[in-house]
Image (cartoon, rainbow, N blue to C red; front, side, top):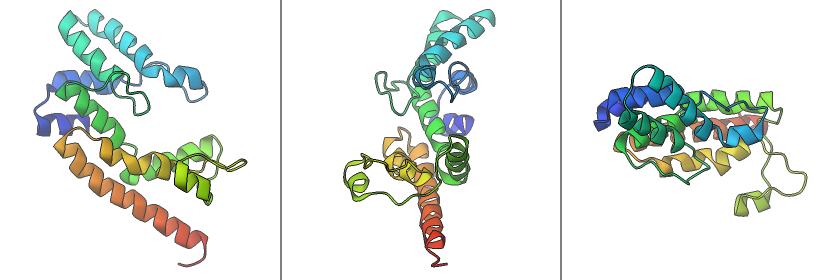
Length: 184
């Protein structure tokens, strides 16, 4: 997806490819929340080591590092400034929605473990904050994050793909809830 977006948006394919390959290379272990939250920083440092060893110049290494540091959805401390960083951000987020997104959110919920569906409370629907004892299901993640991804896209191509994938993901959860309630 990163290569597809890079081509469509006129980004440097070598910068995008390196950033895509290395953006989750260090610290993205799901078992360690603190490391996971800072994995973009650790991955950017790791990328510099790898690319330096491959003979890349400092300017291109810095471009890859910016892409990696700017790819986090929940950390906007370094927004994607270059087309390459915007492409990586969009490609990474597109991976969380659509058919692949369904598989990811369900697999993640099973691994944690947490339910794939639990009815959200009125409080969650109104504020995004769970009520006491309310589980954070895959459906909660859909409402809290996944539905909002399309609004955060930087590239025209990313926005177009996100529209379609969001519709698919929303249709999936609509169907899941209907089946859950015995309506289909």
